Length: 236
Ligand SMILES: Nc1ncnc2c1ncn2[C@@H]1O[C@H](COP(=O)(O)OP(=O)(O)OP(=O)(O)O)[C@@H](O)[C@H]1O
Image (cartoon, rainbow, N blue to C red; front, side, top):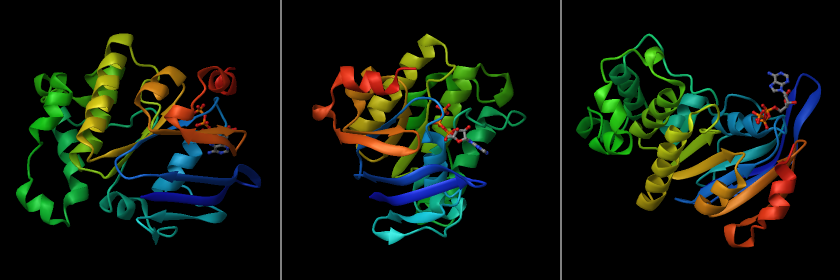
């Protein structure tokens, strides 16, 4: 479904990604592993169209999308939950969720779909209780749940999740992990999951990629995963 080929991405003159390739199958969970600062967020932002590659190509369902804007990529079915969540703090939880429907505005789906699907509240029951609260008044973990929910409201074919467990209290981490499992079971939305936990990657992912200093150094299916080797790759 998604194919990244020989990507080079620079900040100013310094190349942060070099010759990076990655492929993501429809409906699969693909884990992107790597230490801090190796370029994982840069890769996700480039896939989303928020950064421009100097070289290389990105294909979505075999169509080259290098020059498409982030909103065009979103309308094609790529959902994005940035690191640090970026919900709208002064809007209510409900308003934040309704914004997720915006990506469907040109699609037929929108005509039948003007409210938040129940599925969202089944994944994150806490959000139903907090619909009228301002997003900014939620805890960090609840904001992460809101950010994931908002992206899922747009019914993406692929969800880019950048370190969704980072800075989140352990009880909510468990809820987020469970939500990822449920989304995977439903097989409608594939996930690219940026992760630091090899254990969780091994449990949930179908395949994995490891970035090191801007280069893709290892990839494979989860059955090929060697926990000890991968832990070494991401150990600080
Ligand atoms: N806007 C920017 N301008 C210049 N350099 C940047 C910018 N954003 C990131 N970098 C650098 O690019 C490199 C890759 O950063 P990136 O955030 O993609 O890594 P990461 O693997 O996602 O790390 P983390 O796990 O800490 O989020 C780092 O050395 C970082 O300092």
